[in-house]
Length: 166
Image (cartoon, rainbow, N blue to C red):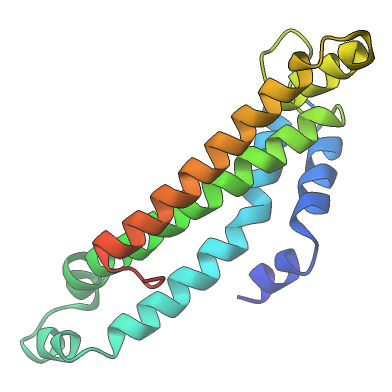
């Protein structure tokens, strides 16, 4: 967890930018930067969730009946932790959309011919003062709808699956 704490010490957007710059820019470098910047969120949540589930009586019963640690992990801990991780994935997806669009906006994401919302906003800004405002507004609305939609999905999943956020 010390490695995760050291990664989490950096602001996620700056870490994603540093990774994207270090790898030379491009869509895959930006995606890798977003993945590296979100790993601590998942690692800390998974650790706390496994520690919480390990305290349940059915885990003690499984071990008392002769279940090996791998059996207990596979058949008892992992299924219970999966719902929380699914909700976390849906929650972090909105962050990933915004971060990738931000990296594309500043030129560290996708290249110009690749259709990506951040690049579309950057390209549309040239035409905003000439009356073609929709070239910037509609990609921004696409980002807004995607992020709000994934946050609503995460909230609904949390309520339906009974995850940690309910």
